Amino acid sequence: MCTNISETVPAAGAAKGGAGWFPVTAANVGFDHAVGSRFDHALLLDFADPSRGPSARVAVELDLETGRALVAALQSVIEAAERSGAPV
Amino acid sequence: MWNSLRTDAPAGLVAGVTAYRAGDGDLVHAYVARPEGPGPFPGVVLAHHMPGWDELYREFARRFADHGYTAICPDLYCRTGHGDPDDVAAAARADGGLDDGLVVADLVAARDWLRALPTANGRVGVFGTCSGGRHALLAASRAGGFDAVADLWGGGVVAAPDELTPRRPVSVLDYTAGLDAPLLGLFGDQDQHPTPELVDRHEEELRKHGKEYEFHRYAGAGHGFFYYHRAAYRPESAMDGWAKVLDFFGRHLTTGS
Image 1 (cartoon, rainbow over the protein chains, first blue to last red):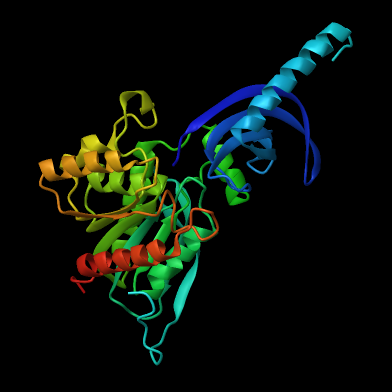
Image 2 (cartoon, rainbow over the protein chains, first blue to last red; image 1 turned 180 degrees about the horizontal axis):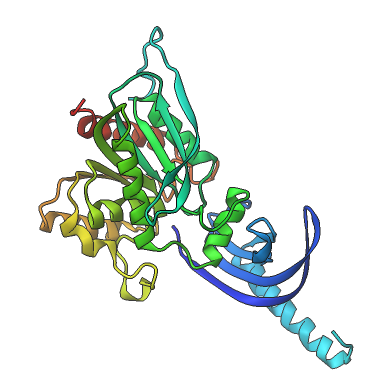
């Protein structure tokens, strides 16, 4: 099915793709047809710079269980980072 | 019919990318495949699926050409940008997906491009799988003017109010009265979008409006059962489905030649 489930958030950072590092200005999160994984549908995470064209992205496909674990790990690490006082 | 060729018949075809004047006047890329020779040939417009203007759809176009059709598959994501089909599809998804009105205009312009060819027999069908099935049916219902339409497991034809968006503002079901071409539908009973119940609802609406249609359902198949590169592939159902598509278009598109 084509779910059309997709959200985009602005991002600040960088990602490493086939052509090396590039700035990341958007993070796209979707759940739709998988392309590179064995799943019918997957969480689709793209770290992208749309101003550089569609190919400027690092793409990841995950199952939902991995996605939940990733969210928890991100939250945990963010909290630890804030406690550490280390600057971004 | 599959493999019904004559071994002593010429089988050349011409295929490649061209650009045509699409719905809003933009020049849009399209993959065109046609048999060699003067025709007259019927035409098929292919509405590609959500994963993009990809290798699979180029193969589909060549398959139709092998069976005597001029096939045109517009790059519905052409305005999004260019790159690997996967990347372009991802960019289109992030952008909120395609606008129904523009897709209909692009498919209608492709239909008219086919009809204007000197090799045309004047009859044109529209074909699509997945989101392309929905778009094919949408074009045939909202704009009309096609001679046959094949919707293969198009999801979202029956859309609940909370599934409508500014780019997809009307359920395709609500355009059923405007459908002016015979419809072929192929569906897998294991599909979750559309479910068999949603296909039932679609049939109910077609019957209510007295539309000419034939639906075929495959018990062991789910969504995308033609896709030999995915786990969803069901070879027996896919081959039967291709036979039904070619038979259907043969009956409705070649009569004018």
